[in-house]
Amino acid sequence: MTPTGPLAGRTVVVTRPRAQAAPLAEAIAAAGGKPLIFPLLEIGPPASQEALNLAVRELTDYQLAVFISPNAVDYALPAILQQGPWPSTMRPAAVGPGTVKALAAYGVQGCVVPAGPFDSEALLALPELASEEVNGQRVAIFRGDGGRELLADTLRARGARVDCIPCYARREPGQGYETLLAAWSAGALDALTISSSEALRYLHDGLDATGLTFLAATPLFVPHARIAASARQLGLTKVIETPPADDGLISGLLAYNWSA
Image (tube, rainbow, N blue to C red; front, side, top):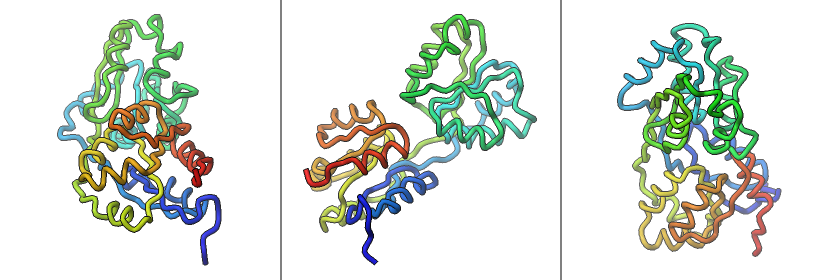
């Protein structure tokens, strides 16, 4: 049966880590498109669990716990809850709704979260993280290894004692790009979705000259202004910034003028 729907005949690359790719891939398929799952990041445990283990032992000393992503929740919460219930004196905070949903799956409610955009800047703008609220508090930031320091630096400037706790690691999968190059060469790759500036850099740095030519000519759908800026810094011009998360990416794909 020939697929029908607004994305019929379109192959869209889903570059999220494999464990997180299914919802967007299913939404693309439901709209008649063909999802091509090609993870650009691999998520795994950090090189050392020492920081997480120490934070768990001192958990009741924290007044605020910030989770940067659903990955941070999935790698930190089992260790946290193994030592007992979520401390009633520690308020959870999240950068976006996906992280709130991940926390809720572990029974953690009452999360501080921005209404949008979903980034550190928006979280820092909330009254719950103002200087008069966090001054003197101890704050745990559960995140991947590396990453931006804006959140930690700003909270420290507001008087908080901040511990950054790497609870997962992001790595390049180490795969070749033959699958993408073959699809491009066959005229069977219509768009890419990119949810991370880091993933975009891996893609750009891993492609040869032919691949970079294909990339420059392919619509690139990204759910955040920071990723769009990174793409343009790499010289890419067919960049479509969408609303946040998978829902935003699929809405951008559905609204795109494919005949332009």
